[in-house]
Amino acid sequence: MAAGTDDKTRAFLDGLTDAEASALRSWLGGAAAPLDFASLHGDHEHGHRPAGGDLPRPRADDPQAIRTVGVIGGGTAGYLTALALRAKRPWLEVTLVESKGLPIIGVGEATVPSMVPFLHHYLGIDPRHLYEQVRPTWKLGIRFDWGANPAGFMAPFDWNSNSVGMLGSLATRGDINAFTLQSLLMMADRAPVYRLDDGRHLSLMKRLPFAYHLDNERFVRFLTELALARGVQHVEARLQEAVLSGPDRVESLRTDDGRELRFDMYVDCSGFRSFLLGKTLDVPFRSYADSLFTDSAVTGNLGHGDHLKPYTRATTMDAGWCWTIPTPESDHLGYVYSSAHLSDEEAAAELARKFPGIGPPRQVRFRVGRRDEAWRGNVFGIGNSYAFVEPLESSGLMMITLGVLALVGSLPASWADPTGREVVNAALAQKWDAIRWFLSLHYKFNDRLDTPFWRDARENADVSGLRPLLDVFAAGAPLRFRDPITRGFLEATAPTFYGLEGVDCILLGQNVPARLLPMTEPVELWQARKDAADIMVRRALPVRDSLHAYHTVAELHEELLEDPDSWVVRSGVDRLVVSEPVPARPAAEPVHG
Image 1 (cartoon, one colour):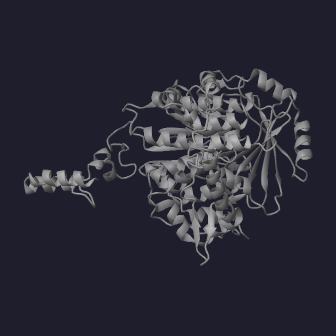
Image 2 (spheres, helix red, strand yellow; image 1 turned 135 degrees about the horizontal axis):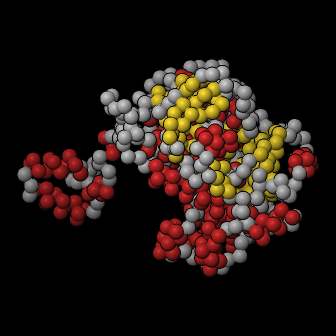
Image 3 (tube, one colour; image 1 turned 180 degrees about the horizontal axis):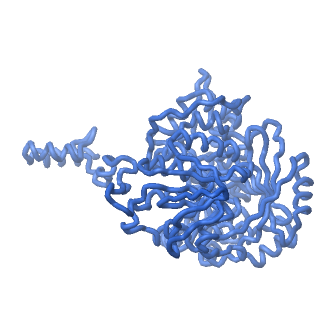
């Protein structure tokens, strides 16, 4: 606050009674100024509400109260749902029903940054336990071997920052790969952690958003043990049918051994089977196949020679693309392809040819799209039971967590109360449709290969949901640098999913034709920033050494999760403090071992 303003404020206070001045200081008191009027922009009420404290609780005398929830299906969707309900609505009796006869698909899971605060703040999972038992690796973004540029392009998670400069990168290199610090770190296979001369570590992980690469089998095992420790009931059963008491209400479930299971609310996490939402309630399925042509995947593991990369890799293949997800022991690969353009045998052969030494292949079938409703009656679908798209932008776990947040935040205390069902269904459908359009841009403009699949994609992939935005992009790019009114209109009307910055990255990374906006600074200024960023990259530690620091230095986790300036804290996810200990079990070898 300026000195003159301080003087005026003191004069204002001097004209008040002592009681009036005291009341104002109590409300708007500032550390260095007489009053902090900037705090008028703050939410003074929210800080006094405990996390989840505004969620409705059932009344003891209400016959329609929701007291029991059955989560149907395990896997990441089921266990994350059960843990969230126990964390945020501890008065609910939560039971997870799954069949142990259904194997876990043991592939790598790539996530997005929102997963970090969801796990550690919203669910209150101690990062030390996660690192010991699940052994995640870090993801700074996605490397796309995509488009005409042989080097492909980087899609870093700090793409909102433009910390080095996209226009300068395009002008000096002809690509976008030097527009942020993270994109440069990705190219060098390093993480923003630095070893000081005195042996301590400086970490910028709290400044730069990152995500996890997770081994699915270890992750589900970890969540299973955590759920049991936190009071989730577990029932092993193979379900035969659901009994309805009305057109949209599930009354009970019958198992193959004659048991009957009853709950007030059912969450369908049964995967592609969609036992309740699809099979029982017959909620229609809306296909995305006219935009996204793939329907199959073949997966396998490949050794990485102990070299961890800080990104998920998406490689263009003859009839689709291949993910590479690094885990401590090996890279997990998956060739996502169109069975209309390639047989299973041909896909497995191409994967083996392009990635020599890959392990035995496993086949996966899927269909892309969503059901018309995620929530119908007393059934809420989360995960593949409701919607699925290929993991080209690692959206699977992110959309699971979004569904979980929607369920926990909107579930009424009683069926006699109003629900937000229509709002939730519309919002989730809008999000999934936005993913569909965003992914379609990856297919429409990828000209790396001239195969039947890619010719078909370029000619026929439906991108109509983003056509107006594409016209604006062609008239002047990057979109992030357009005037505020144009940006505002685009953000309000275009289903961009990852924002205008994400669209810029995908389109400019593929060299989609557009009139480039001119640089507004001398190129020497950009080069000076690039040279400085290169210093940070050269000094940064390799990924494995950086992870080792987080395995051994508790202070680094505390900085990430407690520092008010950390992106995790600033994400706004409600913080859960867990009081009960997590049962210990033998830790796996740390990542550096």
